[in-house]
Amino acid sequence: MVHIPLGPLIALPLVVAPVAALVVGTVVWRIGMPDEPAPRRGAGTGVVTAFASLVVLALVFGVLAGLSAVSTAPFDAVGEFFVITMVVFVFGTVFTASVIAPVGALVGYGYEWSLARRE
Image 1: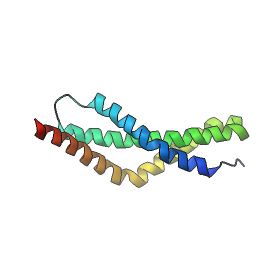
Image 2: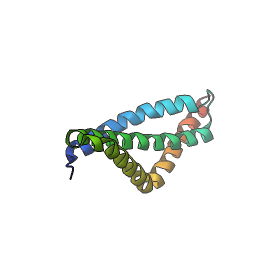
Image 3: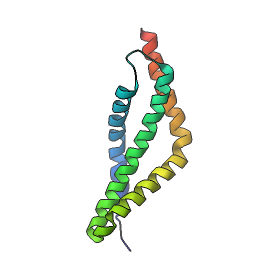
């Protein structure tokens, strides 16, 4: 049985994920939004940003699990990466989609609406 230390596996992604989500959100917003304010499109972009951040969180968990498995079972590292990434993404989506989708939509709509009011 492979022993994975849980301290870094849980703590580091929770520190890295908000920073990565900020970067992902900036990239999604720059690519997905037109130059003029569009509140409805902002709502959709907010939802995409929320789920893209969830993907980043799952990938960080997967990378850490894969790296920790390299030292004990090098051939299992890739499998460990895929299993942990998919488990975190699937369970993260199931348990948080009802919260992150409306929050992302509301924030995206509100931001674009505030930009439209300035003009």
